[in-house]
Length: 329
Image (cartoon, rainbow, N blue to C red; front, side, top):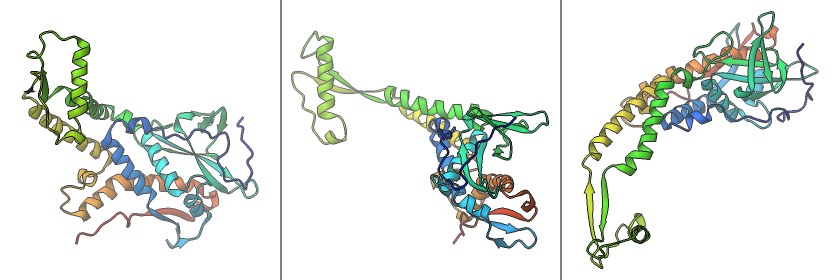
């Protein structure tokens, strides 16, 4: 037997039992700059799309409560923030929206996003989806589930990071290598020779000399400051001779990985960097068609369930992509 909460039909604040709304995708995007850039642009683009409710008989735009619902989902999360978060959830595999219904009219008055990590899905004896959240069970009348297409198994979608794990892991490994090895182990290194000043030197004195040098001569604030040689101390530089080759190879590998990740998300590389854009119209059209339209179309289809059953054959929701497209001058 399903258990449901009875809510105040006039309330628009987040229910107390919804206390975790951290994007599930956050941990994955923090590891890779290209991934973060792609998702950030896609989420903001979709959040910025204009939309409307249209009548199927004549395709004329009409005023409808579902438009108001999507334009102002709840008191705390306005349209932009709400859509940015559900796009992130989409890339994590599943979007779950709690449908907050008016007890008097039965119409949906608010939408609240649920953290996908806290929702589990099973099927009942009638093969209907049952959603469990914080110890409570809900059916499709209370939870709108939008699964991502990646490896969808008929019950739930899977994260794009799971499906393309090797590619994202390679990008993370390259960034890790750069941060932890390249900047610390390759290229030119300073040698401070104190053998003429002192034949023996203990570790403490060595650390004091190095510390004094770093304090007085390293960093941008000391860039133009002359180095004072005294007490027989000599300075020289060791050049490993491999920095340029490795840095070039590393750059090529990172560019290749960036290109692959951008292709996964459908984002033109030039759209990320802003470089080598020869035709702004073609670039933005590719971006809209490959990165934005598939997700927007999926949202349009599932948002049909926000209408009353008797209205689903009369109206539809449509996003407008004109704001994304640019004309080549």
